[in-house]
Image (tube, rainbow, N blue to C red; front, side, top):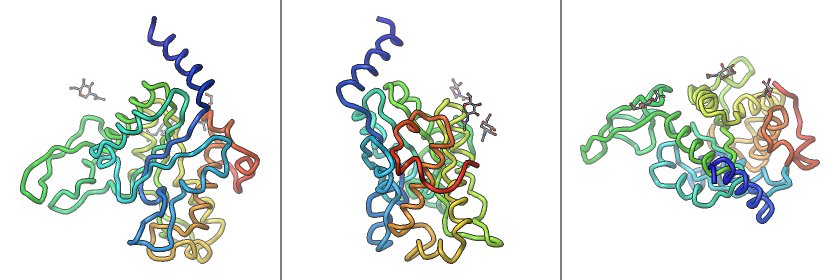
Length: 258
Ligand SMILES: *[C@@H]1O[C@H](CO)[C@@H](O)[C@H](O)[C@H]1NC(C)=O
Ligand SMILES: *[C@@H]1O[C@H](CO)[C@@H](O)[C@H](O)[C@H]1NC(C)=O
Ligand SMILES: *[C@@H]1O[C@H](CO)[C@@H](O)[C@H](O)[C@H]1NC(C)=O
């Protein structure tokens, strides 16, 4: 049977037997328990997404991970072994993907957005290893998800509680890299950074700062809910088929399209 036909049949069978599930891959800003014991009283936005959808959400985000370490630890592979045709996979990294110091921290990515760009770094034992760029790790995951008949959504990282002249500062380079990875793979892109910034700018710096109990990265449960609402706003304003899974609460999240 031709691969396309078997994929279509697999999608139809998968949907009729199992329904769709939304899987989340990301870091502490998305994970259950947020930053954990290092950031008490925080939670990740992935815990608040399910209340806006008609399909279940499985949160596989893990604190401290980057696109590289999530890959190297086999977490994308584990997801691939779990997803069924028709499932959604939302991928959001960036907070932990920046360069480390002289000794590799296991999560930094090579600088730049080239798929084939690499860097050679040294670990604490003095061994050298080759690392890849953020788009490389994200694109590989996306292509593998697409090959399973599942639906990847690349989401840009959340803003930190950093302000300039009463506005959330411009996003770091990983925001653009996320869009680049989406453009190259045809995956849906949600500019989550921009949608959260919109919500925060409207609430103002004082109200937003109340969402950050310990540091400038990890949100309180109330803040995580605002971040989840901003993601839903991005979905409502885009073309992903996840839009059709918004329940009435999901359809009435605040703010408008960018
Ligand atoms: C990356 O390198 C491989 C092997 O040289 C090549 O086949 C591929 O076209 C390159 N991809 C991009 C996006 O440049
Ligand atoms: C991605 O594609 C969109 C639409 O063509 C374009 O506006 C945007 O500049 C591209 N972004 C990147 C980072 O390549
Ligand atoms: C939605 O799809 C239309 C038609 O393909 C395209 O013109 C538009 O830019 C897309 N919008 C978004 C937000 O991706």
